[in-house]
Length: 424
Image (tube, rainbow, N blue to C red; front, top):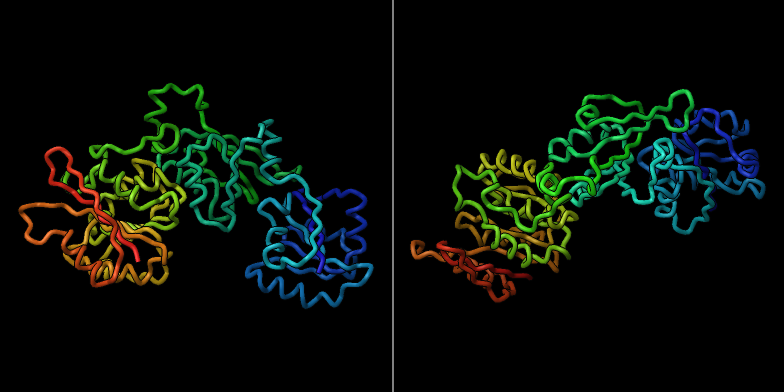
């Protein structure tokens, strides 16, 4: 099966070069979104068959196959209209994924972010692109944490400019300007607006729209002292390897209820996070391990669990303070939590176990990937008769887990701590 994918803008009176007009004239089966149909309807042959591209896409491709018998030697292709460049987060990529054997010919036009950059006379070769069209937040969060200076964003009706601006404000990324392009390519409706994030968060924009974010002032012009303090990015404009314990909001102000920064960093090293994808933090308390991991390794999907309900407000406060969006929080007894809908972890940190360590590890093993690992810190204290290390050894032996040699460390006047690691 052959597809010819033609890129269009939002112009209600589109212009196509002669060779594309001839393709349309000879066509029999056409497809695209409803808005695309409205734009090109007057150009289609009177006997044209049109297939709306709607969710679920499997139904759309089933229709393509069912109508393939209508194709003739003179009209041997399904002609698809798509926004902008069909290979730029576009429908041509979907065809390649759904029907890898299909022949595809693309006739692109400028995509919306290119058109917005043209309107702003803004070079875009250095722009980081994020699509939020039908996609969740993680790639956008990653771009913020990594301090990208220029971000182009494809939006949808859920991830609107206002919602994006509010998320940035919530997590302290307030040093960006936002440029919004609406109905780009439509001479009568096209609009480009420059706003602060505060202004954008209170504004409604027409669909379709897209966004470019730029840091203001530019990084090169920002005073060094300000760059160290601005926003929550700390993992962005001025990345710190290790957040001081004193800066976290603590549980009842108790310093002993946080994994100390040097131990925290050694624990992240033991988890081998550069090569992991999903981290579970069980017993997060203040959220220090999850937050440090997110800022240092923003590609991670992090699921954080805590039995104490008062810790929910604490981790929310800390994620916003340090600019660490995208950590999923689960409050309740881990042993009673339904894990079936969660992504399987390949790294697990156990920050608290309440004496039920074996049961927690056993439950973790039901979902841990084959190459996954578990890390825990054990405090050696003369005041405790049965320490966590003993419980760990017993659990690993009974569950047939492979242990690595523990790392023992002592900080100042605190009791010695051992960093423990095991795998299947």
